[in-house]
Image 1 (tube, rainbow, N blue to C red):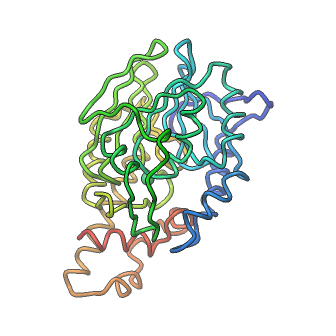
Image 2: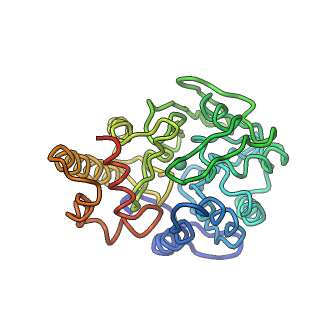
Length: 318
Ligand SMILES: [Zn+2]
């Protein structure tokens, strides 16, 4: 990790080194390896057994990893602000991790997009006192029956308490705990509901599921995502990120500009290869057999999405 991160020591006394965080990040996605039917159910069922790590970044911002998407936490006198809610089944472990950061109650929750690994915990966090804020398309998808072909799963409407009470369109600025937090909607990228969250004082940029650090990304075409949208969002992220900024991805280890640039090159390079072969008339299976992502498969293809899944997501959009 290139970012200058402080080592975090949780209340239980674990020293969270960068290597440990990397190890945990590698372990977590195993239960998402199953494809097709059962992926969503399996993820939810196994969430209770998840190991949550707390990584302190700077200026009081921490990240919880291990129970769905990465959860950023800003404690303070206005109550804790959470960026994303993780899996509901990990409630007790997330509550323990939050208590290890401070005794402030959870008062605010922002969803980076509508996906279940970021919003499954909305209901319990709302019942614990959190006001939920998100992009208007997050509320739209959580309010209705929504099918995700890539997961072969149809989500029923979320319970009323899980629905964001406040929504915005393009941009929203929030003042909490002495910090200015800027929320910005992306043009459709991973979904049509993605937002970035910039902690201005801390210079920490949470870019939601537009960035998967060390794992091939999932692209949800069912709710507005596309490979070209992912590339546009990544270019937009790179235009904003400075060398000193800490970048929180939706999944994978906390990173920096150089890792974001590597990821951009991976997306663009894969898109070019797959598009050229598809134009020649090759089928998806034929293109997968040419191993267009061979250079990164060993590292990036062992998590949420296999090389074939990722190539399939690119193929669909070119
Ligand atoms: Zn997602």
